[in-house]
Length: 579
Image 1 (cartoon, rainbow, N blue to C red):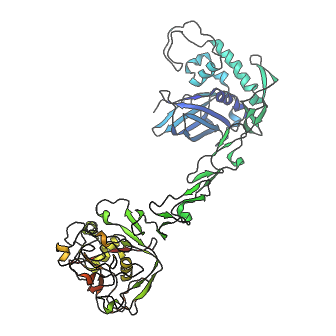
Image 2: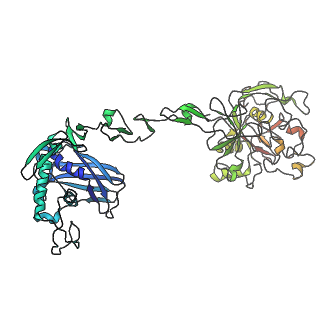
């Protein structure tokens, strides 16, 4: 333990000594708690108090005790005795002691007993050695101790402290003065007799006369409650209930403050605990939005390279960008919302997504398009009521390896690189996209992300296909390397929304199955998985060993779900947040 000392303030001690007689129900109690080094105690403690008769070994008077949980600042102790358990009115006569025990995280420590009322009978010369620090403080601060006496015989150190060179001691006359003083406190103090007038007192003669002078700053009683003399009147501080406050500090009407505590959640506004509205509550992503309901402003930040529209939504060229948890947002060069992981380390460097907003496009190839086929027609409008996310890159072997490491994906024995994962079948593509938080896209989602609302021959436009735009067979497989390249190696081939390698490198599994033409195809953007012409599933996009006709945005072929090839991979898609 810490060697605690509780030093009561003089006004608190004197009002306590006399207040037992004046206010049996409740007593103000103030002081400072310090440790053995004299340092004020900070933080949480519990102070346990019990009232005893002066005789040793007696039981607490009326069984009275209280326990107060306190949070100390600069060691200040402020409480009201009897607030929890009324003081035993019938047993307060005569000498009595207040016993205090401090309980903290290290255990409990009992402090020296404090004499309350009846003190003249308890402070006898024979008991001088057991005077508490608090009693000595009364003697000293009240000027009762008088001048120093002659040097006495050296004696053992006691609670009074070690002997000093001046030979300080306590003379019997001091106790007579103290008895006189305490009689005045118990029988002539304004807090005993009521009112806030000064009184002249002769304690030795037991005479008390009221004067005319006003006394301020002392304790008083009004309507059975403890107050404070203020401008000659007894002012009773207002409580939190009387003020109608549940939190905060408020003028108590007597020159002080009534402390109504803090809010466990939210903020204190107007004396009530208030939960401020959030950006999510308001459906806002950005900007500042009026009163938060608790006296503050709802601040939702900015959109980085995007714009904050009038509805508080981040947008790129008017296209609203939904929030994507765990990702940062920018507007890419194609004016679409692009999302990069907050943590872009390792495989996450290629886990980048692009938002494709709601809208319509014309799917398929017109009959006059060179190298088109009947399965590319009829051209038909597809409308997306909801937007979706498309991966900026084809699924890399790094990402697939991370899925393998968790046990969610089977081992495909491919190096951990930034090149596309190949030799992956349709079901494995579904599993890895689900692990990544996405899914396989529908054929119409894929073609919309590649071409955009106005049909393009290739993802980059209508310029002839070449190794400037795609990893393809431009005379040699893989532009001369005979294999796939790292994803994103052909930035000139960027699609309408900003996706890379949507033509060349690898063909990309989608959810749809094979149909000989588009008659009866869905027009809502969903996958076409019914009425299949064969057991094949589709993979548009062309691979590193395909020539220009296979790289068309409308071009597509298919194979059985179990099909594997070194020019077949996948690209993942995601539904809007909340779906």
